[in-house]
Image (cartoon, rainbow, N blue to C red; front, side, top):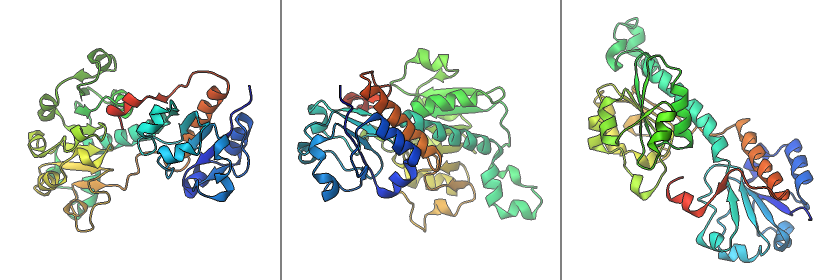
Length: 336
């Protein structure tokens, strides 16, 4: 059987970060790839003429939405191998109707997010970001550092909302802490799997008043918008820390502003709603809030790990073997 013809479609700067010479060489070994290897615009005459022969797209951030008009120009397309996390921005109903298959590097991208989250949990236990940002704790030689809560990572209760790819990894990582209790709220998770991972499944409203740290790992769906609203924030213990490395829309920002401005709650936010926050947001001025600009996911050398995952899938496809990380249409009902 002839090897499939492939084309890489993503933003130019993304391609330059994700495909070095070695990975382009591997792509050429696995598939037929006429020049140019890459396109950031499928209307470019350099690639527009050969779309009719493309069997496989390797996509990433900046790839276009695959609607009917675009798919009509690629009648041979059989698979989209995504070199990033969610395929939601690219796929359409027409994509699924035509029986095109999709894979994602979301599992690979979960690794740095979980690592970032675990580091945030450790810092939250010691209140390190908040103490570092509060100049008064330096001026008085740390006499008032406990204003943000007890400084400890021993005997903590960690709440994980969403037993997702990232959530599962976080549950595993927090087992390293001494005398830790990990609670998981996810109505779709198998309770037996949660227990096997070392956590206890509980309802969200039961979890909230029990945790020292609340870490969010649920998808962005209409049903999860403002999942953590004012009453649920109020249910958290005083000095609890909210960590959000999932989606900003999971949290009612106005309610979080009030809780953090009062000093009752702390927060570590890698995602916000809106994103970025307006420059005058109170969350950017409070010492008990650390805001980072969406750093948790794959960046730098981590990006090439996602490319490798997509190329592994291409090797399976070319060899007639099953995909390892195939995304089905119904998966998007419960995931990002």
